[in-house]
Image (cartoon, rainbow, N blue to C red; front, side, top):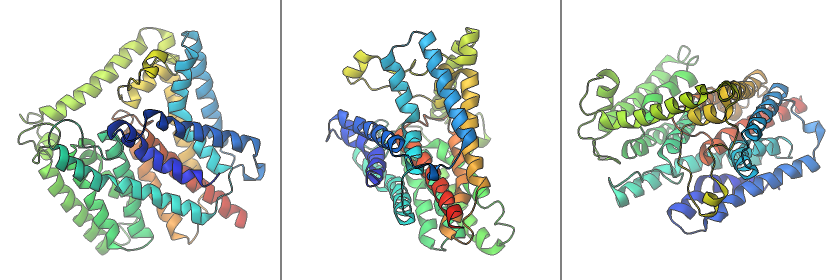
Length: 407
C-alpha cells in the first residue's frame, strides 16, 4: 500500500494537466486518485494498529464537528446526495491521505523520498511554465505549470521557498537551495502571480525570525541576495507581457501608489475576488441559518448532469466557498482544525539533532501562514495545494511519533 503514496503525489500535480490541458489521458482518470485515497483510508480502518494512534484529539473533534455541521446543513437545504459527496470529496480527500500515513508503517527513508518528490514536483513548475510562456506567449491565462491554476502554482512555489530557505540555514548550506528559490520568481513574473510578490518577503521573515540575530553575516548576505532578486523580479513584473497586456505596470507602484494608472489588471483580479467574497457575505447574511451554518457542503458543487457532461467547475476562493457552504461556525471550526494540527506539530518537537526534520519544522511556520492567508486568494482545496500541505503535515507528525517511540 505504501507504494501508492508517490503515485498519488505525482498524480495530484500532473494528472489534471495531462487529461484536461494536454488531453493525453481521459478526464475520468483524475477520479482514480480520489478512489485510491478512499480505498487506502478504508484499508487503514480495517487494518488499524492502535499503537500507531497519534491522538490529535482536538484536530479530530474539530473535523468531526465540522463534517457533522456541513452535512446536516446540506440535508436541511435538501441538497442531493451526489452534490454532498462531491463537496465532501474535494474537502476531505487529502485529510484521508493524512490519516492513512499516520496509520501505515513507513520507513523514514520512504517518507524523506516522498518529501523530496513533493519538492521536485513543485519545482517542476519552473521549466514547464517557461515552456508554456514560449509556446503561448501573452495569449490567455495559460502560464500555470502542471497544476492548471496560477494561484495554485504561486502557493506551492511559496511553500517550496520556505522549505528550501530553511534547509539552507538549518540543514545543509548548499547554494543550490538559494538559486532554486531565485528561479521560483520566474513563473510568477511570466504567469502574473501577483500574490507571490506580496507574500514572498514573509518567507524569510518567518523562517529566519530567530536565526537572523545569531548569524548576522551569512543571513544578511542571503537575505540581500533574495530581496535583490525579488526586487529585480518585481520590477520586471508586467514588462514581459504575461497573460494580459498591462502596459508599464510596476509592482512597486501598485503597492505604494494607489493612483497608478497602470494597475488596472491587478485591480481587476482583486476586484473579482472581492466581489466574489462580497456575494458570499450577502448570501450568508440573507438568513440566520446561512450565516451560522451555511448552505451545506456540496451546495456549490456540480449537479449530476453537469458532472456527466464534463463541465469544469469554475475556480473560486476558499473564503467565499467556506462562507457559503460552512457558515461562520463551520469556518471557525475549519480554522481551529488547521491551528490544532499546527500546534500539535510545534508542541511535539522530538527531532533533537536531526537537521532534516528540524529544518522542515521551521519551514512549517511559513507554510501554515501562507496556507491560511491564501484562503481569500485561491481555492486551497485544489489538488496540488492540498496534497502538499497535508502530506508535509502528515510526515512531520508521523516522524515525531516515531521519534517518541524510539526514546
